[in-house]
Length: 143
Image (cartoon, rainbow, N blue to C red):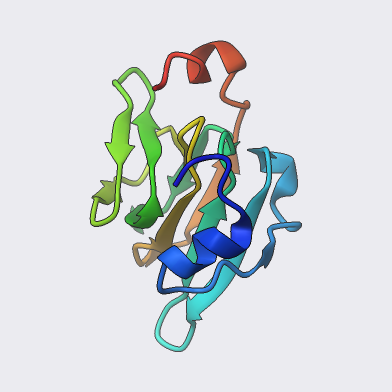
C-alpha cells in the first residue's frame, strides 16, 4: 500500500468504498482523509480512509455512561495511539476498542494508505472533544 499507489489502485484493494473527501472534519486532520457510510440504520458505521501521512488530531470520545469507539482496519497500514502509551500498528483485521474518555489519535503510516471502519459504542449523551494536532515530531517517530 505504498504512498506511490493511486487512490484508484488502493480502492481495488479494499472491499468498502473510499467515499468523498472528509470536508466536515478536515480541520481536525493533517493531510487528506475520505469518508463513506457503510451502515446507518441501527447505528452508523463509517469507512474512514487516510492518504499516506494523514492523521487526525488527538481527541476524546465522551459519554455519561457507556460510549467510546471501535476501529477495524480493512486496508493499508496505520497507527492508533492513546496518550502516554506506545503507538499500535494497525493492519487489516486489527480491532481497536477505545474506552470512553481516552485521549487518542489514529491515522495512516507515513508511506501507506490506511482505511478503518469506525463506529461509536452506544452511550448516554455521547460527544467528541477535538484537541491539538499530533506534532510532526511525534509522528516522525513512526515507521
